[in-house]
Image (cartoon, rainbow, N blue to C red; front, side):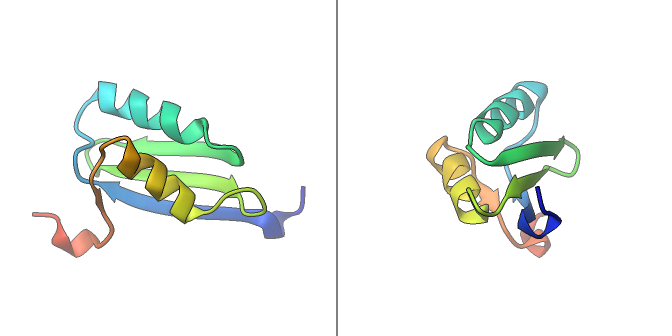
Length: 80
């Protein structure tokens, strides 16, 4: 697989606060076709995703999280 097809994105998920949330988000995101790696940091509330850009993109990942009821904060400056 060529490196030029690897996409990476990071979301700040406002309500990612516990291990259960982490497991649910990991399961949701890894179920998306094309996602190869998910890194979740609870204290920073970040979800970093590596994916094959020929198969999926950041928008699909974001919509999957939103449909599952997670609030996504895109601008880190808005976290209080």
